Image (cartoon, rainbow, N blue to C red):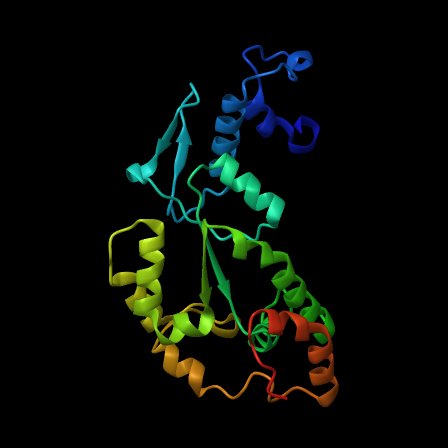
Length: 232
């Protein structure tokens, strides 16, 4: 690990003796986990200071504004999810699923995916659905359907807050109902999210017959797994 991550990782994982040839000195498992936690927190620090973690010279972690919970977006496979849960006891997963037709069409608008051909975008979505299937059996995971979140934000967010053990708060649902984050890779806007979404034509309306055939062939199994129908 030291050769791959370099000096920064070495500073987190070094033992009491800082000499290079002793870097593999065995240390207790709990200490390894604590150093991993510290390293992960520092890696995700950002300028917005949604969650800021600093280290004193003694390596003591201080949580900015005494926050007790930390949320981040991640796409773990089963092994990684197990690692998260071991590294951060009490970890909870919020899993959002969306109709593959809408996802594949949306991907074409974002710079990270727009250069990919249609079939490749289909495969990315289909494989992610299959990869995430393990979440169904985890009792630390709360699944959300995008369309339910859009149409019933109050009900869905009430369930999320309850699952997380947080007190009821209307603010998250109100934000979701009145804000659209980066619509089609554009700037975030304040508007009625439900109305905007339902005013759009069907996501597949511009697809060629060849693309529709490809989608059925590649994504059919994943769509069925999520109980979404294919309307063409």
